[in-house]
Length: 92
Image (cartoon, rainbow, N blue to C red):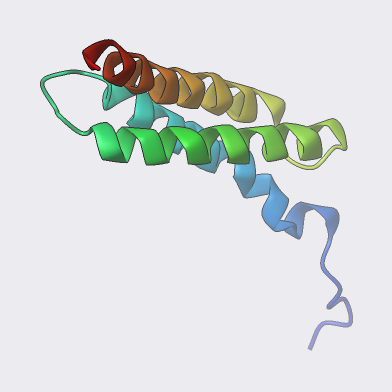
């Protein structure tokens, strides 16, 4: 049995915030296509991508995780969240 059972800095769940935000951001951005009609999923995925992306960027500045997936996920999530909201506001 190994003597080293303490988690290392790379074992933090914070390292997955950026890639998760990136996947959700891509889902949100692709859901903005009017032919897909996935507006509820787009809003939810966009909001989660922005939240997780900002948290991932915070941890990336501390040296845990990478910045580019967190930043890209945040931008795509914001676009996927704002576009359906703008369409809904123009409809009413």
